[in-house]
Length: 172
Image (tube, rainbow, N blue to C red):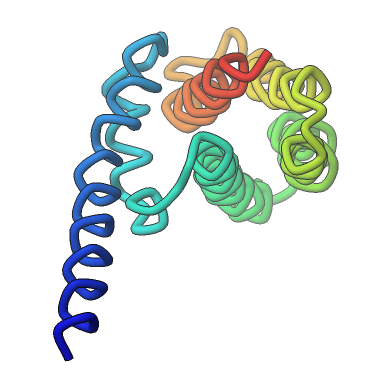
């Protein structure tokens, strides 16, 4: 029983050290990020971050980017359905759905995750930069509109994708 207590104490000590080191890992990673508050809050929101290494934190960040991008795509699809035959609005929303956010959710983000897992960091960064560009391209569809109907959503996707790019750049 005495050996069991020693082993249990060592195991408990190691688990506590791992748990205490994770916030430091997130802080260190996000300290170099241009979106530091967003980085810290995004990673801390996911319970997996408590036991993740740097690679895991980057994966969590891609997952968060994917969620934000999917949320925006869902919003754009609902707005597209509401165009009521307005050809100009249909074209603007349709371009955002098909070319910009459709490509982001269908190709760029799955590619970024696959490239991260394969340790092809430059390719993952390129995928995420495509997501950043896609949010800007969608925003440009509405240039001249006042107010821009999707600006906040495009900015949110831009910022989280750019933040994730910064995280992956730490591997290069």
